[in-house]
Image (tube, rainbow, N blue to C red; front, side, top):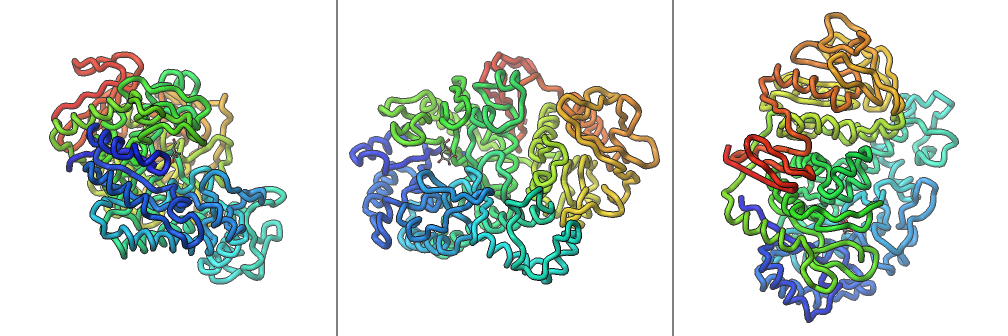
Length: 633
Ligand code: GAL
């Protein structure tokens, strides 16, 4: 498949006289896609039922005449003022019970049926009008679910829907009382109507209650998305896409993705490093203008799974953003490297955000491919270079990796609800595990916990997977792969209780977690083979010789050669021998990459990316900072 480039464009922000010139310049730069419309509700329907599609028709016409294909967004992330006036209670409430007001975006509660009806109406009108229009190459539904902390809402609508959801799930209040252990602190209820949302309690609510609310809230996102997907499906054959975020785990992306055709995500490497990643100051300084060397790849691999193989970058950072604590400019060449890295991980398209920097409103400090005065910004030439290179490069394909990691959104909620140590984060545990694998030059597939056939993998990791569903356990055992589990794998029942027999309770693993401890940042448990456990350490009880020990002689990795349990959270030096040893057993070749260099093998090529701020030489080839190289495998 040919890889393609695109850009996000807001015709409603610019005088109509410049649309044609914009379109011509997009095509000239080699772009294929232009995404429009996702925030334009106030211009599409300025007053209830009064539609204005003339401008959109003209914009679509001009863009398509220049040879561009359109991704049309549904505008439901930005309900206009009149919608909020019609349904004042459609606003989400925060955990303190305060409404999240009008004046930016995403000001809606997923559970509000009146708002859902408005969304269904506008999406139906859009679908009727453009569903069979050949110029519309794809749809984007809403924009970045969960962004600005909008998945959880403590509104009346949410409370009502949560009670219904609980009634369906538990059938009787007694069953719920038992599953949650409500006898503790006299929390028992006689009816589902006595259950409130898990906020404003005196001290922490029952973790089972909080976890149920997380599961419910995720289901509400799925329901909201499905409503739009069904309407568009009935009216259009163009693929349906949502643009997910980085490091966003508040809803089950696999479940949302099941109703869509393509997953996409919005990649802001410098913004993430400044704002979202756990990293020390030295790491942030070293990668300030390149981004973390594993963050992009991690999300590429995750969203490839969410899209069941089909995925895009819907928004690619082109220059400084406006929203991180500090907003550096990328090194020259990074806007090209990021695109190639996405293609190497199987992206079908990479769209830059945005075409022209807006001189007004919230994002006026956010770079685009053009400056506000329409002169080219640095990323435009890099995008054009990528477009030329795509033309020269043969198909790169994607290949199944030898190594897989299981990613489970519910596990993230479990450990958020009950971290036990302040800095225990599922995402971080997964990300650091992924980084340890990548430093050994490995290509990785990320898989949902529903994965049924794992037989193609040689090594599978499932750290922190809070509850391992029986079907997954079976698939893991049947796979024949070397398994690396722990810490905290299978540590809870689905209702957030400690199972007895005690964890990990996995057949064939004759070790039990006897006691767990969380560790403050300055404390470590040094490991005999180098490095240390941080954050988390489990005391294992069992028979046989452990595969690795702590420096003071306690089990660090236990089990047998094929089924291994890691008893803590290894730091980078701790992971290296654990990964190397598991790979040796699995028959997977590893390399020790120079700092900042990363690899990705596709079906046909090896790609090499230099994230370091200095030139790096590897395998006889020197890559400059932001350098990309590829050769046939
Ligand atoms: C994304 C969003 C875009 C824009 C961008 C700025 O979160 O989808 O609309 O706000 O960030 O970086």
